[in-house]
Length: 251
Image (cartoon, rainbow, N blue to C red):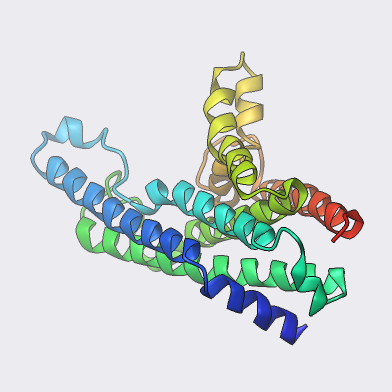
């Protein structure tokens, strides 16, 4: 297992695509901080009646969907970077190879997701200062931990979804398109459904599940535990499908 994981890590860090994704994530953190800055500047110059209607200046809410997509794309890349499965020459055990890929994607998602969310939350906190709600949605680190943990969990889930789709579809481009539909396309369509289907359907979309896991949505369709179960279900379906494809396909 250790050798298989080392081989997967070597492949990941010797291609250009992951560094491009990291650069995109870094740009999004800076972009999110910029949005927070201008929002706070607008807040400071607005009348009290308008200040009460301001949205949160927490930039992590803005960048989290992009982080999900980038890590899902990374998962798809890890799955499809070896289309002929030449790695089986060094690691004949397909289950061990799958485990190595899964551990690599999950670990990378935790590290990258935690760093990006922490930087975003920290920069937002510095920009917001001691301003009151709603522009500053939390008062202390304890208040933000549920959201931060839920955001990182959603990023890990997105990475594993990308890995499963990549293994099942055997094409980086197709897997990324499907990831885009799952993370952005469907969540954009579900609010247009008739009531109450719009709320129920939106409540099980990955971008919305993170808010339900964090427990920051009033009258949410799902409880935090049910939302976590739904995220796990996404992983089981996509990674399970990818596993079956990997075990049954020809090298």
